Image (tube, rainbow, N blue to C red; front, side, top):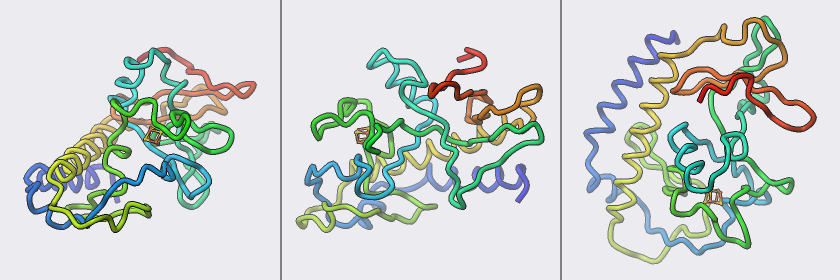
Length: 214
Ligand code: SF4
């Protein structure tokens, strides 16, 4: 699918997401109660990758006084195990992911608690649920099924807001997409997001930006 047609599709989805009724979404959510197992934050229980948008990363940077690359790294693991490599030898990534500790746990998990809980990302705030188009879905979670309870309107509102944010991010990314951004370099990871393209180099086990432009 071409970039313009992808943008058109995302714009249509965005219109639907903005018009979604929290009450209707809430009715479709199964009963859920967080049992505070923190399995969703740990590497030992499956894929705990948490992707993050530029705005979410900046919120955490401001809250804890850390730099961009202290918090996230390029998400280069595509579903098929590969990723886009350009003619200069640079890899391309289309998302940022929260860094993990050597054991695979999220870097913000300390003693079973999230140390950025108040400013955590959409994915963490809405886990285990997500909206796919306007259908609800959920991942594996010990809190499902939870005790019977009334429809969770706050969760439904958060899911709609997350879906809107995801679509806005995707549209802005595609509008700024420059697959030639790595020209003149080799061995970089070119990360594309809603703010443009950024070159990251891995040297001596550390990641650094080519340009400090953000
Ligand atoms: S940011 Fe917090 S809630 Fe999200 S995966 Fe990390 S520790 Fe868990």
